[in-house]
Amino acid sequence: MNNKTAQPYQNHGISSGLESLPMNAFSEIPTPSSDAMTITALRKDDGRVTGYQLSNGQILDKEDAVALARKGGIAGVGIATRDGSEYLKSLPDDSENNNLSHLPSITQEGGDIS
Image (cartoon, rainbow, N blue to C red; front, side):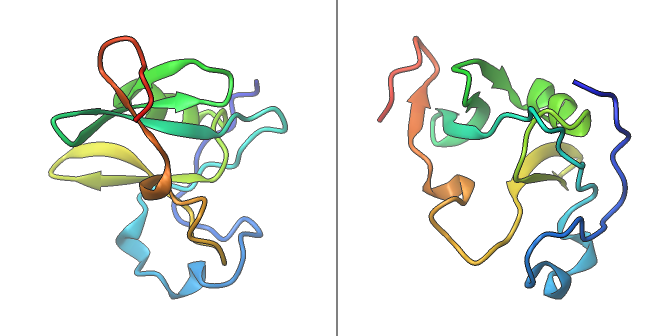
């Protein structure tokens, strides 16, 4: 994996619709590397997202996932901030089926999918 530096909002060839988002929707949109993984499930605790399961099966907490995305290791996401906490957010495209909110959830203990 390369160590590309994430840039402030830029349209990296992502489909139209991204331009119409408020500029503050994302603090960064990293450029994914050619071997970047995707997020396949959300790890939740009491309904709150606490981490992400990746396409290789690895489960990362929010902070580690943001760091990996910033290095180009996770495709299809941007970095947003709420109440001083960074998290990953789906990049908009023409499909809602690949939005993070549509992914299955896994439990804190053991990674059971629900």
